[in-house]
Length: 129
Image 1: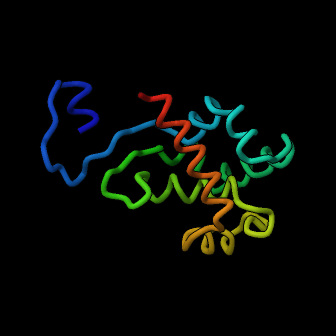
Image 2: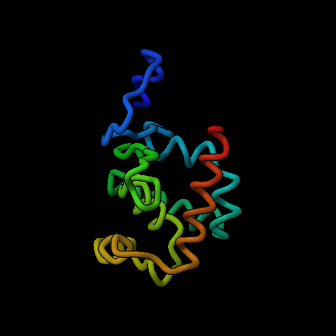
Protein backbone atom coordinates (compact mmCIF):
# COMPACT_ATOMS: atom_id res chain seq x y z
CA UNK A 1 0.00 0.00 0.00
CA UNK A 2 2.94 2.33 0.61
CA UNK A 3 3.95 2.23 -3.04
CA UNK A 4 0.36 2.21 -4.30
CA UNK A 5 -0.39 5.37 -2.35
CA UNK A 6 2.88 7.06 -3.25
CA UNK A 7 2.79 6.30 -6.98
CA UNK A 8 -0.92 5.83 -7.80
CA UNK A 9 -2.85 7.64 -5.09
CA UNK A 10 -4.90 4.75 -3.70
CA UNK A 11 -4.59 1.82 -1.28
CA UNK A 12 -6.17 -1.61 -1.09
CA UNK A 13 -8.30 -2.17 2.01
CA UNK A 14 -7.39 -5.26 3.99
CA UNK A 15 -4.11 -5.77 2.12
CA UNK A 16 -2.34 -8.51 4.12
CA UNK A 17 1.02 -7.44 2.69
CA UNK A 18 0.54 -3.82 3.76
CA UNK A 19 3.85 -2.29 4.88
CA UNK A 20 5.31 1.20 4.96
CA UNK A 21 8.97 1.49 4.02
CA UNK A 22 10.53 3.86 6.56
CA UNK A 23 13.99 3.49 5.05
CA UNK A 24 15.50 1.45 2.26
CA UNK A 25 18.40 0.45 4.50
CA UNK A 26 18.95 0.36 8.24
CA UNK A 27 22.05 2.51 7.79
CA UNK A 28 19.80 5.37 6.58
CA UNK A 29 17.91 5.34 9.87
CA UNK A 30 21.06 5.16 11.94
CA UNK A 31 22.68 8.03 10.02
CA UNK A 32 19.57 10.19 10.31
CA UNK A 33 19.04 9.47 14.02
CA UNK A 34 22.68 9.39 15.14
CA UNK A 35 22.13 11.81 18.04
CA UNK A 36 19.06 9.94 19.28
CA UNK A 37 20.91 6.65 18.94
CA UNK A 38 23.79 7.90 21.07
CA UNK A 39 21.40 9.30 23.71
CA UNK A 40 19.19 6.20 23.82
CA UNK A 41 21.97 3.63 23.78
CA UNK A 42 24.16 5.28 26.38
CA UNK A 43 27.18 3.85 24.52
CA UNK A 44 30.26 5.81 23.65
CA UNK A 45 31.29 6.26 20.02
CA UNK A 46 33.71 3.31 20.07
CA UNK A 47 31.06 0.89 21.36
CA UNK A 48 28.53 2.06 18.78
CA UNK A 49 31.15 1.76 16.03
CA UNK A 50 31.93 -1.82 17.10
CA UNK A 51 28.26 -2.77 17.07
CA UNK A 52 27.67 -1.13 13.71
CA UNK A 53 30.59 -3.12 12.30
CA UNK A 54 28.97 -6.34 13.58
CA UNK A 55 25.67 -5.38 11.96
CA UNK A 56 27.50 -4.52 8.74
CA UNK A 57 29.32 -7.88 8.79
CA UNK A 58 25.92 -9.58 9.13
CA UNK A 59 24.55 -7.60 6.16
CA UNK A 60 21.96 -5.83 8.30
CA UNK A 61 22.99 -2.24 7.61
CA UNK A 62 22.52 -2.27 3.87
CA UNK A 63 20.65 -5.54 3.41
CA UNK A 64 17.55 -4.83 5.47
CA UNK A 65 14.87 -2.24 4.96
CA UNK A 66 13.10 -0.65 7.90
CA UNK A 67 9.45 -1.57 7.47
CA UNK A 68 6.41 -0.58 9.47
CA UNK A 69 4.12 -3.60 9.27
CA UNK A 70 0.70 -3.52 10.89
CA UNK A 71 0.58 -7.32 10.96
CA UNK A 72 3.63 -7.60 13.25
CA UNK A 73 3.21 -7.52 17.04
CA UNK A 74 5.86 -4.80 17.38
CA UNK A 75 4.77 -2.91 14.27
CA UNK A 76 8.13 -3.39 12.56
CA UNK A 77 9.34 -6.37 10.59
CA UNK A 78 11.35 -9.02 12.40
CA UNK A 79 14.68 -8.11 10.76
CA UNK A 80 14.39 -4.48 11.82
CA UNK A 81 13.56 -5.38 15.43
CA UNK A 82 16.34 -7.98 15.65
CA UNK A 83 18.91 -5.56 14.23
CA UNK A 84 17.85 -2.87 16.70
CA UNK A 85 17.97 -5.36 19.57
CA UNK A 86 21.50 -6.36 18.60
CA UNK A 87 22.57 -2.74 18.29
CA UNK A 88 21.05 -1.67 21.63
CA UNK A 89 21.52 -4.85 23.68
CA UNK A 90 23.21 -4.81 27.05
CA UNK A 91 26.88 -5.86 26.95
CA UNK A 92 25.89 -9.22 28.48
CA UNK A 93 23.29 -9.87 25.77
CA UNK A 94 25.55 -8.62 22.99
CA UNK A 95 28.56 -10.75 23.90
CA UNK A 96 30.67 -10.90 20.75
CA UNK A 97 27.66 -10.15 18.55
CA UNK A 98 27.87 -13.59 16.97
CA UNK A 99 25.24 -16.16 16.13
CA UNK A 100 24.54 -16.96 19.80
CA UNK A 101 23.63 -13.34 20.50
CA UNK A 102 21.50 -13.18 17.36
CA UNK A 103 19.65 -16.39 18.29
CA UNK A 104 19.04 -15.23 21.86
CA UNK A 105 17.86 -11.76 20.82
CA UNK A 106 15.62 -13.27 18.16
CA UNK A 107 13.65 -14.88 20.99
CA UNK A 108 13.44 -11.67 22.98
CA UNK A 109 15.44 -9.03 24.79
CA UNK A 110 15.71 -7.65 28.28
CA UNK A 111 13.20 -5.02 29.31
CA UNK A 112 15.98 -2.41 29.22
CA UNK A 113 16.96 -3.32 25.66
CA UNK A 114 13.38 -3.52 24.45
CA UNK A 115 12.69 -0.09 25.93
CA UNK A 116 15.66 1.35 24.01
CA UNK A 117 14.43 -0.29 20.79
CA UNK A 118 10.98 1.22 21.29
CA UNK A 119 12.42 4.68 21.96
CA UNK A 120 14.49 4.61 18.77
CA UNK A 121 11.65 3.25 16.63
CA UNK A 122 9.27 5.84 18.11
CA UNK A 123 11.73 8.58 17.15
CA UNK A 124 11.69 7.24 13.60
CA UNK A 125 7.87 7.13 13.50
CA UNK A 126 7.45 10.59 15.00
CA UNK A 127 9.70 12.09 12.35
CA UNK A 128 7.56 10.52 9.60
CA UNK A 129 4.36 12.13 10.80
